[in-house]
Image (tube, rainbow, N blue to C red; front, top):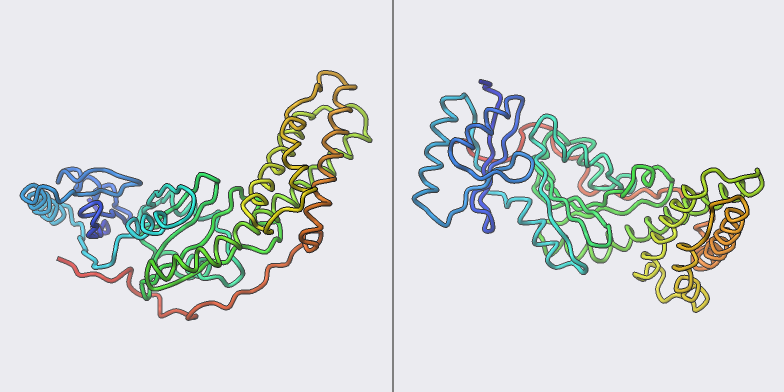
Amino acid sequence: MSPTAHITLHSSPDDGIVALPGGPGADWAVIALDLAHFESADEGIHVLPMSDLDRAQKALDTLYANAHRFGITVTTTPQTFIGDIGRGIAARLDDSWTVEVGNCLLLPSDSRSRLNFLWDSLGGSLSYVMQSYSEQVSAVAFLCSESGLELAVLRRPWDGQIVVGALAPEAQFASLGTVAPVSVVAPDVAGVLKKVSETLLPSYEHALAQAHFQLLRGVLDRIRAAGTNGPLSRVWSLNEDLCHHWYGLDQHLRRGVYGPLPKALDDLLRGTDVALSEGNAQDEEGAVQLLERWLRLGTQLVGLVQSLDPALAADAVPQPVSPVLLPGPPRQGRHPGTSR
């Protein structure tokens, strides 16, 4: 038994009562919730539906009795559950989004590891919270779109405002020196949704386009080196890398990151699906022909995209974003609530 274990209870219109176990003794908190017949959800989170009020009351009575027996602190909070906020944002965004909730109160926490892919402008709100107040963040909602975008939604610990930022699809994206996406903050869902649509998502799309462009250029350089250094031993690996970044760049261009596409670029993108998937690299002659085709198409794509955004050719330097209401309050207390 551990006196450091704790459970935070939220009220949710979708889930009923949501319980977040945490602390070094979190296993005991999970046991207490299981014994009270709370239903297990994401990453140790438990929920208690309110459809049967008698059952719910018995479950709560059992929870508090077991918490007292095990030395677990149970705290209630009036704050809206972050999962409800995440679902409220996802439902109003274009595209189709799924929502997962991560429990940051566990040790270790998978959601905290996931936040290692945080991709935010220098001095951005989300990076500031995670650098300076990470231990006070209780939960995060992760929003994933069908097109591969991923957002993190959390509350600022000192005032409860909603912060939304982007995650990099791969670790290398955040270290390329591109202009990073811009996280946003607002007091409510309507306010943050407007900023996500007008600021975060366009900057995210642009950052992804820049990253795929830079990585595509790197693959083309490796293809040139392979073409001048004799037989190709990694032809299919180069093919996979080139196609990955080609299609990544393609989808962001088609979603309008630079507006309507010039006819030459549109024609190139439409005509290359078959060309990139076909080819015979079973022998050296076939590999050379395939390399030449990739090099020609890739060089054309780089030139056309660069004509849309000449800054892509240079190594981008992240621009600082003025932090919002910084510095924050003293780092004391985990989150608002009342103990029963």
